[in-house]
Length: 237
Image 1 (spheres, rainbow, N blue to C red):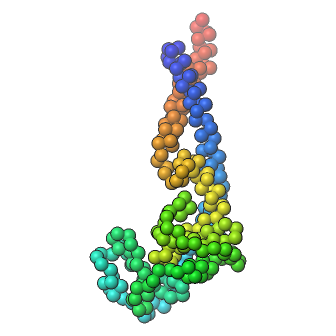
Image 2 (cartoon, rainbow, N blue to C red; image 1 turned 90 degrees about the vertical axis):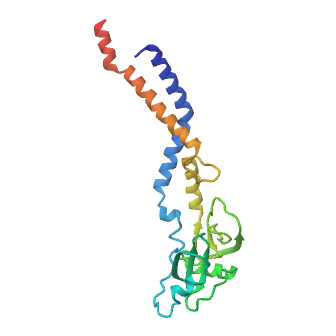
Image 3 (cartoon, rainbow, N blue to C red; image 1 turned 30 degrees about the vertical axis):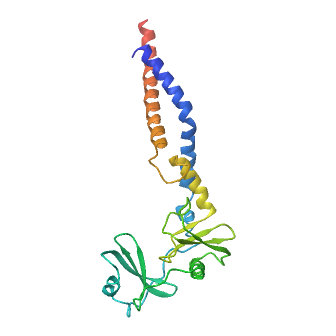
């Protein structure tokens, strides 16, 4: 290996180490934080139950054929679940539009109202008595919520937010200070500081490839500076 290659590898390794060293540290720190935090806590499963209560007795439920006939065109899925202590039939068509029907009568159900959203959040809360402070309708997605719109945002005094789409009435997401802490490090880890969701960003790809180049240049220097070869050269001289 020539001296010229050795010098070039040394320069490449030095500058790449300076440039991507900080990001490597962020990768290690953010990865450690995300590994330490239990994902169940991040999702607030200890605060809010995301599981709908079982229907129980299925006798008297409206026929799937009756419900499907009310939809224009083919449907993707149909399921029965409980909503506000009453069974409903949830239908999703091929355009991903969701329809709700009363599970006993088959009549279309109106969208979830403000008071109903608050009631749903209260029943799903499992960590003592909830202290809800506001219920607001949102019409656009954000870093915290990227689900069906419009949706109700039910907030607590300690900044826990429960998102309930008007079309479905189920709890689509729960965001807490722990989730925001986790999400901050997630954005650092995937290098998407704006939307916190694209883990194929050019920044991430560029730094990952730079890390590979830095490793190759480091191996080149290791081969060049291997102590055994140095001793052999001394013995020859």
